[in-house]
Amino acid sequence: AQSVTQLDSQVPVFEEAPVELRCNYSSSVSVYLFWYVQYPNQGLQLLLKYLSGSTLVKGINGFEAEFNKSQTSFHLRKPSVHISDTAEYFCAVYSVSGAQKLVFGQGTRLTINP
Amino acid sequence: NAGVTQTPKFRILKIGQSMTLQCTQDMNHNYMYWYRQDPGMGLKLIYYSVGAGITDKGEVPNGYNVSRSTTEDFPLRLELAAPSQTSVYFCASGTSGNHNEQFFGPGTRLTVL
Image (cartoon, rainbow over all chains, first blue to last red; front, side, top):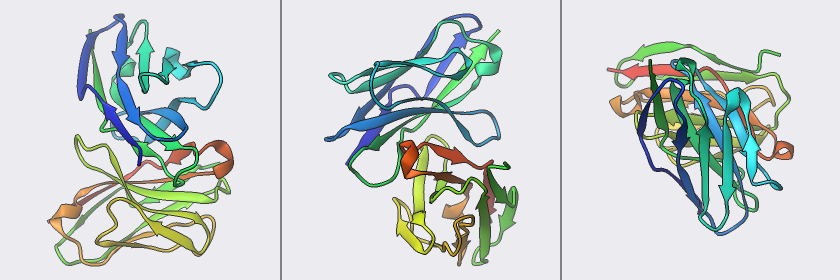
């Protein structure tokens, strides 16, 4: 069975600083990987996804993530954050040959300070 | 397209009461899901469906029931509400043909007192 670990429950950063949100997964089969963002009092929306091909994927709002198969990681990065990036971020994994469902990490709350 | 809609947005129940959380999607997705979100716990899958007439248990199904009579609707039923069911509930839909990318509704915040 697959699992996802988000290594930081909370990440505070200053505006315009870079940020990295860490995600590790475990799975015995090939996976698709996702990052979702949840703004306060809203549902989740897709930020970016890795399916195959280039290990560096770009998403909305200037975010990008790098798939590292050897380290089973899929860390999310942004070079310069804005106040509006304050949200909770969820990493999720889907096993290609497994059950038809996503497994989510516990979430990382990103707080941007002015 | 409205996407995934959920009703109600908020609800307070007394212990032992029952209710149905409604979920509708207009994207013709075959897959639909119910999650609950508790602080610091991420999202836990309650039930899911891969098509009309087909449902299956997720990680935390106890105390809940679902049905899928149409492609569009996937209601979640709580028969005997308990304080442990206080949570935010999210419905999502997706397709097997899109690598399981899921689209989420705005959520229902349920409190059981």
